[in-house]
Length: 74
Image (spheres, rainbow, N blue to C red):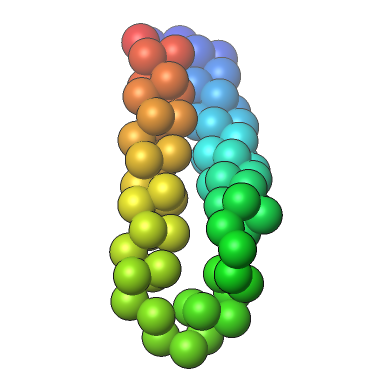
């Protein structure tokens, strides 16, 4: 395997991680804007329901973007 291909895949994976984190942040901000309550305040008050929903958003976005990154590496 060529070293250039390995480096290109590594750079692509790092770019994918950064892109995933950006999409997760945007998803959280969108959820915070759409809901009638302050999500950060509810999380700091240990609201389990909000925590589950926010966690689900992160997992869903992580899976979706991770699949796109994985398909690109093949």
